[in-house]
Amino acid sequence: MIPARLAPIAIALILSGIMSFLVTGIATARALGTGPGFGGAWMGAWALAWAVAFPTLVIFRPIVTRLIARITAKP
Image (cartoon, rainbow, N blue to C red; front, top):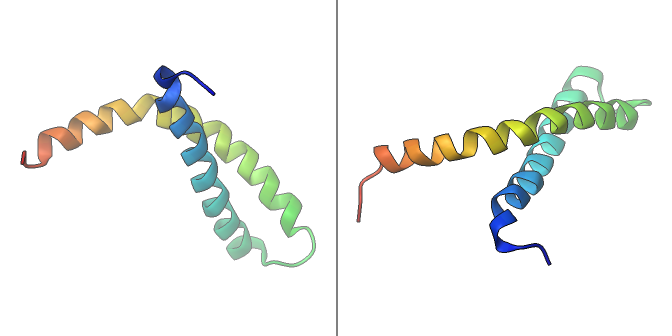
């Protein structure tokens, strides 16, 4: 188990992995088709995208959370 204080980092790691996996799969299929070489190209694109997506999510999640709190109605 990881400590609860690391939950935001774990969420960012998993969410960025899933989102970058799906988006790069769609983009790679659209650009190259699903023929030979698709899997390798997709995994290469995913590795780069995840390396960018994870720190981006860690940096911007608190900012977006504060923004959403400001623009949404309080119950």
